Image 1 (cartoon, rainbow, N blue to C red):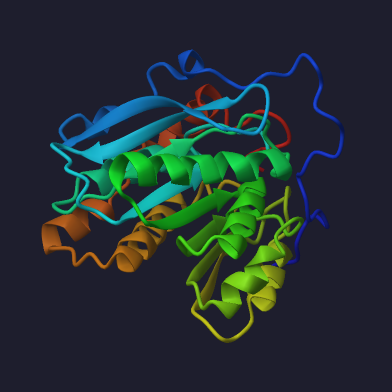
Image 2 (cartoon, rainbow, N blue to C red; image 1 turned 120 degrees about the vertical axis):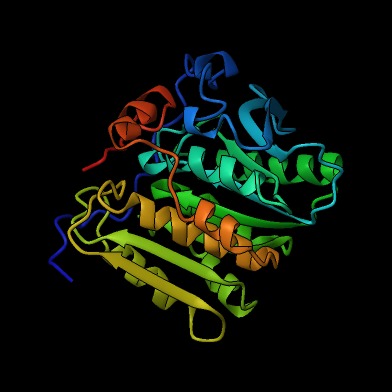
Length: 292
């Protein structure tokens, strides 16, 4: 593993929320429901504003990907969380591709791409994630959740996963270590964890994922994979990262993929030239986040 280029362990905000700061609206993300390459895939996307019952500015925007003619038959769903700037498309825009593919399987899964009301503030983001889980349980009878987080997103992933038994799997891309103590409880419950990181990450060192791997403990199922020389958004290896995350989610959901479905899952729907542009449109490069 190459020498890390940063000692940073956190992108969490430490200042008070400015009075003029308000949550993003769905209207900011027009045109990001589907990728063009997913037009032929049998799934639907429902744009949502999900309410959080913990104070003012009580909604956040999200996109729920569902199989066609979905009848609430799946007990497992995936929730995809972005970084310190919020956003809805993920590192190298892989969340768009993952959600379309996972919802299009023969036994497709509900997948929620969600923003935060106040990004980088874990005390606000945790209630957002819990509200998303409550919504999916109430509206679609989902009882098991796989949480995926990029960068700062590791904080709400491991905080919620450490306190809520409905979480049955956690995965991160280039996670921070601040506010991630919940991974210890996740390890004690033997909840599977997958940690992905680029060794050339200039925003959060790959040592962050090394530390998380050790914090998890040796009782359960933990895996860390390091992409040599890659950056914070895994731009060189995003297709491989996406494949690993899809396999992680479907494995926890207990899905057995046919060869045609496996081939589909292994193929990214994001064009190489669109990775960064979609992240800008999707809000994922606001704040402290970067592809460096």
